[in-house]
Length: 73
Image 1 (cartoon, helix red, strand yellow):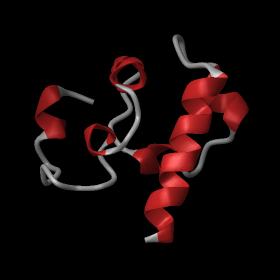
Image 2 (cartoon, one colour):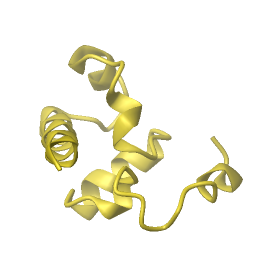
Image 3 (cartoon, rainbow, N blue to C red):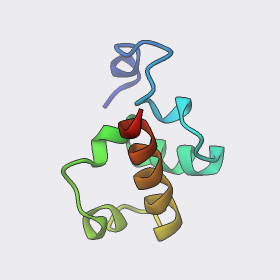
């Protein structure tokens, strides 16, 4: 995904990583792995995500809990 692709989302979209309560370090690592939204993880299981460099269990738990929080709204 290129930088131009990031501009397609509204700035206040709750699905964007920057609009979540995830720590900036997590967001930085996820961006380096070319993830932009929480919904990018919907069709992936934890093992698939762990195969990405720089991704660990803490990041996965954070993403899953943020996704659940947004879905509950």
